Length: 231
Image (cartoon, rainbow, N blue to C red; front, side):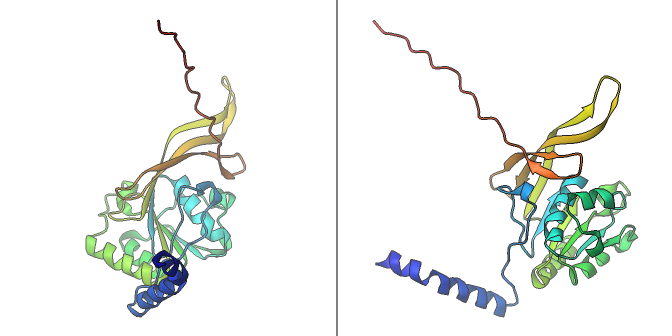
């Protein structure tokens, strides 16, 4: 009987929780469109911050919301190519670029968070320019603003606190022959780590046209079982 009541009342309880959270000034997180290549690895949420270990991963995180109509911003990443971003799925006509904010990079990021759905930032410390990373108080204030505005923060580089960290390894390129050809496509294993939780991974392929997809892994081959008679 108790289980039946709990199941019946679940929608009402969730609605009450959402209402209380809203009254307390902390809007509940909502799912944000995530690139299909990250299916099973990550689900973006409003108010969240996500760290990407490379330009390719940062662009991939931006591409999902952008293709769904979100306005995006890019702060402090002049080497992030618009053409490559567009090929991945970023809509350039709805993207604001601030390539060289200087020491005001954090202020520029906070200002864009107020008005855009997703903001990608590369802190100066990640570029080798000698800039100082964000202070704990600044990070806390920006996190609160993300929750209030319902925005998403993507950090290309290091960040003190985040909802998930994405990295890639075992990169393999194709297109080169014996002294000829050009690098065209690649595969890499992408790992997503959430705090102290379990790390999940998948093999992703970046095709020559910029499309990104998951690669099916062959099933593991178990060694044959050898039966021996006894006696």
